[in-house]
Image (tube, rainbow, N blue to C red):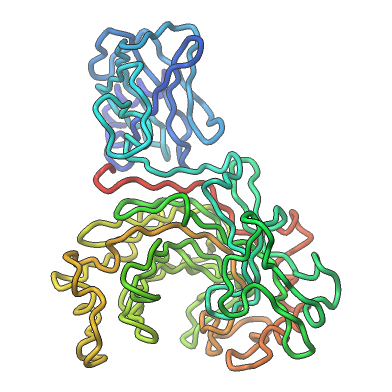
Length: 484
């Protein structure tokens, strides 16, 4: 394996093998009827993975093994090696090390071993008889690489109520708007009238109550299950998707990693975020919200100071407060701007590391925000006792300073459009045409839809099946706290 030996042998390349990249521990498993498989997840920057191993014979350091294999390309989201010619019996010990070429540098993980035949287990932390190489025993408690659309993991929200910002989309379960292909999840907005026909938004009836658990309306608030279009009160003119793990997966503390590409197009609002599974401290924002990444799809969108706030900017935030309208997210918000590029041109890695003492946000391993509320927690951190005198502290009975961020949260991914809640503020400037609605307008959806000839071409609906306006997600992974 020339690349690995060169990294080992040449002193001038020793720096390439330093700790800039951390080699993951491979997942090993037995094949049926015979053989063994090694694999690590694909990650941007990997160009080669080499596995060196012996069966029942120690392999110290970086010595040559009885089996030495270079893997030059990933398959199905993994850098995998399968050997059906070797006999590995339960109880046999596989001694191995691996080399990864990442970003032009070579990295090793050495002196590893795995005992064949241990059981896979389903709960973390695992018992001693479990195979600690396999998830969730290795700490990877949730993973989706979107080789298929796992509808046991991801439930579609079906509602026109949006997220309380009077956005212009309604959410549905339709493979036009949410689908997987080649290991990527696409969440793509389309026009409501593409489904229901011309004139529907101004004169039709959108009834999404449903008649079975599979198609039941998930949110009636804000007229979310039925709307009637009139000449002034338009039905949501956009059809989109929002998926969540509320009934399949939630966690407290850990590391979330999502690799995704943001959509490009005016007034698109993608989001990947977390909400509490049970609202342990009361209604929003008392029970908190964690925004991993949000963005705006506009290419030429600026604030009053001339700073670009479109798709070349992303934001991360935490929302929290004793009750509405007291939401102190301004204390726990950060953004990152790209110079000459945007978040819709390539995939970026968005990470949250959430612990019992603090929470940190990263973009491609760059930390953009770290929040430690201090020993007295978020009530003191938000200065609510002075900002809102005599306000009850909803977190006062929690022993954890991170309350409300000390309970199970679930994952949400969606693409919204527009809205009157202020995310597309009237004070921001869009080019080459202005924002086509005012947040105070009683006819905002109509005003937006009437300007379709301005904004819809920016979605490039006839190019590549309109997928430039889709949020693309490569993978979602969650590790248990203390396992990474």
